[in-house]
View 1 (tube, rainbow, N blue to C red):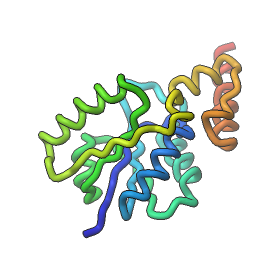
View 2 (view 1 turned 180 degrees about the vertical axis):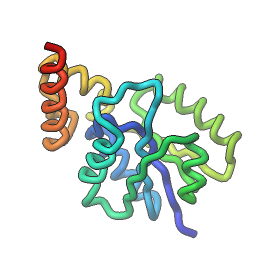
View 3 (view 1 turned 90 degrees about the vertical axis):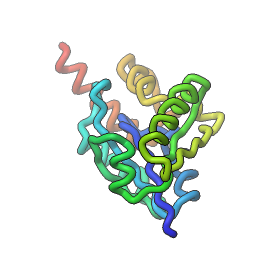
View 4 (view 1 turned 60 degrees about the horizontal axis):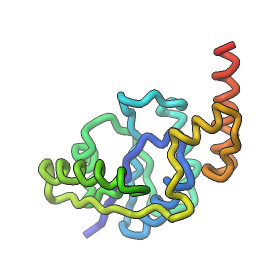
Length: 166
């Protein structure tokens, strides 16, 4: 049986924390589908197409990765991908409470798909895309949290946003 996992997220932008979970999650399955989603409760800095390209570039050297956009219920997307595992990263207790609730709801929707939690590397636990963007907007250095290529993209976007606000 082929093991297919889905790692969903907005990846706005993709961080070193995301990359840690992707690399480790890819070892657990034959194919790891990175589901880049729209999230109506978030205002992304990058368009869906930009985020897809960013994730594809950042994961190009990892075997067994497939990057797919989705705008649907996670379990429907996982079923469409033929997944038997949802991979989720945990940084803190607050993440666990939310993810635990989501895993329970997802199990009610399809109990053939398991949710697997991976703890973020200790050095990467504080990283969150939202905080990376906030630091960049206020002129802080983000190189410890994202790859050099992503850092350039975020800084360039912040400059564009700054010029529009003037």
